Amino acid sequence: MAISLKVNGATCSVPAEPDTPLLYVLRNDLELNGAKFGCGLAQCGACTVLVDGKAVRSCVTPIESLANAEITTLEGLGTIDKPHPLQRAFIEEQAAQCGYCINGMIMTAKALLDRNPRPSETDVRQALAENLCRCGTHNRIVRAVLRAANETGRM
Ligand code: FES
Ligand code: FES
Image (cartoon, rainbow, N blue to C red; front, top):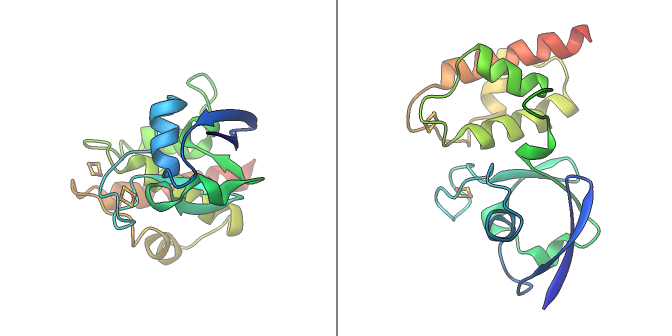
């Protein structure tokens, strides 16, 4: 059956069962590969997207729960020519090693900065505490989020 979703401002119809996890639809049907499959159990954060502005683990979010929801993925934040301040800050701080966790870090940080534009370092660390990074680049990731917050605050 076809399910209608609103992703990055565009409405699309996908041929999928209602209990299909959003992550599968994003990656397999819509070719939005920013969100990653890490654990599939809501444990790592690699699959995080925004649903109505809240950071959500798309690996355990069935598409049937998303009627009328605004879904935003990493691809919806910025472009190569015009990256979002968070994307730019992650590049400037070289915050990725393998990069697998970075989608979840950026999307979780986006939700944080939207509700708290001037977070402390403690705020950032708390917000990202449930996002796992096997490479151990946490310190650079935190610096990148604080850099983006500073930049956004000046704009
Ligand atoms: S893949 Fe969704 S939380 Fe790990
Ligand atoms: S940069 Fe490799 S998992 Fe975080």
